[in-house]
Length: 411
Image 1 (spheres, rainbow, N blue to C red):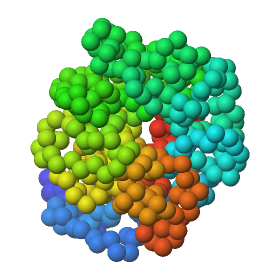
Image 2: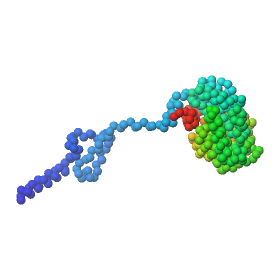
Image 3: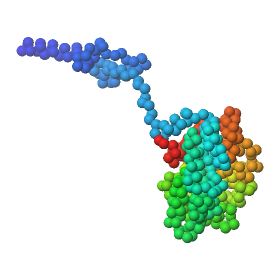
Image 4: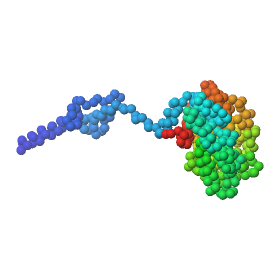
């Protein structure tokens, strides 16, 4: 009995001795002395339980930090970055110009300037067959470093650049008001479909339409080009036309932001719109919003002076109007000026600086015939620090994205 007690006492003493020592647990017989030291700057933390146990847990050493995995770009973004990296500053500026195509030498110009696109008028098509028009456009595209936007105003009614030529269509397209009066929505949609197919068959990829302006007075300059006299009705029609154009694969341009109203023709002189801001936000803006929501990627700004937003400058040259446009329609739409050669803005520019003022206002694409003067003026403004290269890149990205969406640039 005494022997058994002695053995139990010795065993108890061994247990107490072992628990009181600083024994470090080792995994599967690993040599404790080879454990990695605590990294510099990492504080030892001892919990209450560890103190009670009489030993300290040494935290595992961290593996050397590896490089973060590269960010995978969307295929569209990869194409954009590649295109931009290959373009000089002058080429980027030239992409911002939507130029009235000269009567001759258009292809030769493209060997020197990487223009964003060409716009055609009725005179360009006069007397030509469909095959001749296709050949003309294909020649331009072959000579372009970056595929061109090829645009026309084919609204129907009083504005018909292509269908005014009987070789291209038996008779001109009717105005939206005529179509709606004759056959309602169905005829309007069928017209948008036929119009888009005809233009695309000729190599034209942008129709500067539809007109989003609201007009109730037959004496208004814009009346014959408008879809109707109330915002809800016009918004519905704009949505239908834009969706049809998107389905056919042609670019649409909503015009003329912020809304033309009953103003006179800015082709002939200065026009001032005296309406209150509420008139625009509750009515005129709605067709533009409907068009963007239905897939439109571009919007044109008018030359009217809209007193409620900027009493000093035409809308096309007004930073305040462009800020409102972005807030209303978003950052992704391509913003175009109306023609910078029109009389309505000449009193507010010195001619050569119209392009610079348009860029400073926030436009992405400039409609002009003076491509050389515009490019040189914008480059000079960048060198002087008046325009940032970042702003140019933002505009060019919008333009190139539009071209990708139209299938002009493969992804």
